[in-house]
Every structure is written in structure tokens, then in C-alpha cells.
Length: 80
Length: 199
Image (cartoon, rainbow over all chains, first blue to last red):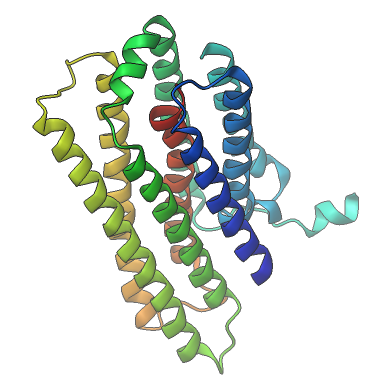
């Protein structure tokens, strides 16, 4: 479990650095926005599963924040 | 599949009431995020031009700070949950150190955010400057208040942990505060790319 937590933290840091690097682009093509949103979803899901520790809990409790995250990221992608 | 399901815990960590608050907070911020995107759709150029005035670097540093702070809180909770009667003192001291580190990072987030606000407000920007800044100020100030509250909660948990007030079987209060702190992190994880990065 210890190694998993460290791994999750490293992935979160790497994806944050990736997002920051994208922020330096003057123009962000659609496919990069899509990649950024997918990486944001992954980050959010990692926090839900391993930091909030909902991976160990009955599915209905884990699903609520996951559905929220999916809905918010999808709506951002559609409406942007 | 059945076996896997029976191994799952019945309730999420901490007091169940905090999860009602977390779900309500997620919905509230979610609506604000969608409001931002809908408004941006009608004023893309205005949003892109205004976004240049906010510091991506401080948003980036604050993301790293919150992620790391959340990690520290998880380490503290795991330390307490896995402790034995024999290791009670050592585990509580170690957990309190993790929590203190998380608090220091929380305070660092607040200081960086205050300096960002001071820069923005110093330029005469207010809620009524334009739609981007209305959302930017509203979202980030609202989130700032959550970080401030979360830091106070962590400080109270830290004090109790230092006094060996939690045990592996009785750490619901700690888990409740930790869940709130992770929610603050989760919200920022969506807010950061949306307001600071996407253009």
C-alpha cells in the first residue's frame, strides 16, 4: 500500500507538470485539450480511489464522486 | 465478484455527515465550473486575454502543494490506522509530524493565493471587471475559504493526534477531517486546468 501511495503521488505530480507545460502554449489544439481533460480525470479518480480511500468502500459511495467527475469533465469537453 | 464485494467496507471513511457535505460541495463547485465554461463559450477571446493576467506558475505551485499536502494527510491516517498498542506513542508522533507538514503546505497555499489576489486586486480588477474575473474571483476565493477551513480542521486533528487521542479503532474524527481535505484537493485538481490552463 505504501508503494501504491507513493506511485499515486508521483503520477499526480507528473500530470500536473504536464498540464503546466501545456499552459505555455499560445494556442491549444482540440486534441491537447482532450488529453488535458483526460489527465485531469485520471488525477481526480486517483484522489477519489487512493486519497479519499473510496476504492475499499461499497461501489455506490465511490460512484458518487466518480459520476460527478465524469459529468463535470464531459460537460467541460462538450461546452468548451 | 461476490467475494470482492463482501470485502468492501460498508461506509466511507469518517463521519457519514461529512460525505453529505462533500457531495453538496462537489455539486456546488460543479455548477460553477459549468457556468464558467458556458460563459467562456460566449466570450472566448475575452477569457483567453484575461487569463493571461493570472499567474499560471502560482496555480501550478499551489496544485503541487495541495497534492503533496493530501498525500501527507493519507500517510498520517494510515499511520494511526495501522498502529498497535505497543507502537501507539511512536505512531502518534509520526502521524502528527505528517499532519504538521500538511498544515504547513496548507498555509503555504493560502500565502501564495493571497499574493496572487493582492496582485490581481492591485491592478484594480474586481468582480465586475468582466465575466472571466467574476468567475475567477468567485471560484478561487470560495476555494480559498475551503482551504482555510481545512487547515483549521487539520490543526485540530494535529493537536489531538499529538496528545495520542486517536487509535486504530477510534480515528473517525481524523478520517472525517482528512476526507474534507481531499475534497479540497479534488476541487482544485479540476479548477486548475479549467481556469489557469485551457485556452
